[in-house]
Length: 168
Image 1 (cartoon, one colour):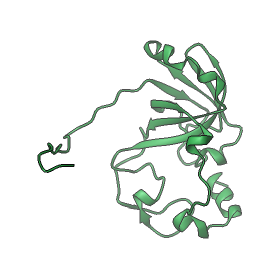
Image 2 (cartoon, helix red, strand yellow; image 1 turned 180 degrees about the vertical axis):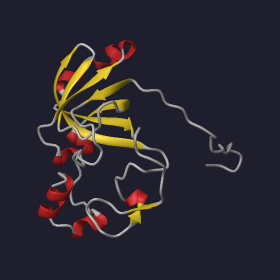
Image 3 (cartoon, rainbow, N blue to C red; image 1 turned 135 degrees about the horizontal axis):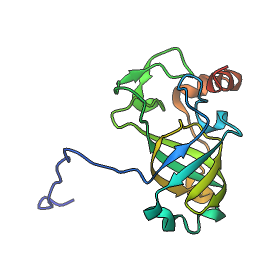
Image 4 (cartoon, one colour; image 1 turned 45 degrees about the horizontal axis):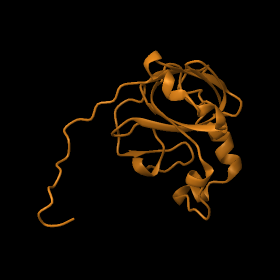
């Protein structure tokens, strides 16, 4: 950036509108699996509004999709939370807690099929009625990473993660 380039100021507000809603058997926040990997086999539907149905064209060829959504039942934002995998409070941005400054969620779910404006999905960790903001295909050549660090989560064993993620 050069010295004479304009500097953009922070916008006061950014508004999004849902493109559809999630339909799932998950209605109780305290019983819903945490993360899609612990929601194996839980089926749901993403019902897209009619004006966006055309945007679903060609999505059928993908096994998984990223779903960006609004945590509509999250409660007020907090800067530190005790995540489900730990008993220590962590910075919210180092967790996947729904109680974020911008309550935006992200899940990777299996795309089982499509019926017009309805996506049939599995591994659903979202609550029934969750507003969907966007959908993107999961593409391994873009999304898969190797030799990664998972911060404080590296210390959590898989058995504990499964038990807590499934809310057992």
